[in-house]
Length: 368
Image 1 (spheres, rainbow, N blue to C red):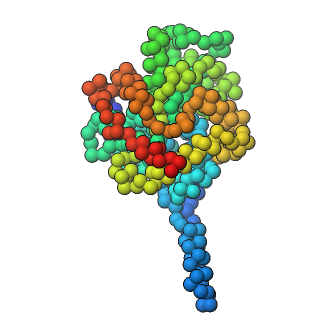
Image 2 (cartoon, rainbow, N blue to C red):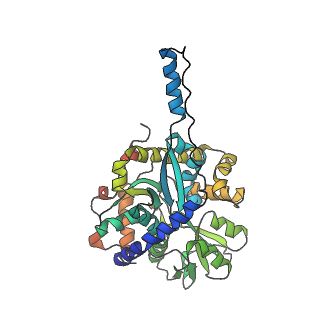
Image 3 (tube, helix red, strand yellow):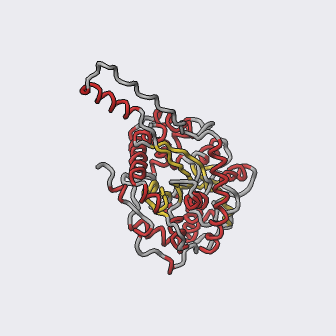
């Protein structure tokens, strides 16, 4: 998909993103809790001295401090983003004074459009969206401020069980894949180019419908995120053959982004957001299976505990979540090279100074 096509698509999806957000916010938000009105502090008794009244007043103010609501849009619902859900479940956002109002956009284009339209404050999307928006030279730009994942999060599954897998097995076969211009679609295409394999990659099935389409007989292979991949396996509908993340190597697939204006106006909120997610990622590395399942299951209703844990372990084993969640110069270079290779970014549109769309100052402040 060319930049021109993406630009037109982004414009069209502004309204779609708004409708999605309104519909999502009309229902109870997964993992969120409504703000409660803080009780008024009682007036001190007449005989209370100034020395004793001050600490009580400070304590009351601390207990009744209101949380700042952040309208947050995630690209899809996947255990690929487990650190975020852990941060919500364990109260790490609240510790930073933030209440997350979460909506699932079902596409990085929609998540980016929500930011531009002002109906989301922060989005978790493919970082390529910041590059696309920057090259449009519009009134608003997006900045990447936290790199959540450094591997592709999809897995390749086959309809027929294979004793061993080679990329040549895809030659002439059909693969149910992701929408054109999305990170998982570009990773798949780059892998096929790298391996010299020609396959029919189907990109016109909406992500929520992919598993059902495959179960109904469409496609010889399918590219899925967790926990959908493990669910299809358990049902006997598909067989695991490869991790796209391990096959393709380091790649900055999903980032937290916000408009430059929002970041400039709300640095404390952005820092708190980064702090909370980093706490979630660190917690996942030391928590027990039982603790992880308890934290994540509310976000994946109907998904059995064993599939949630299998999904988390798959992502852990491929080092999905970096110790320091930063977009490095090397990662940014690979991102742009992949975009050019896939025809969605012209060589002359390559951003020379990554700081035009990347702000790692909040990540660099972690631990301070």
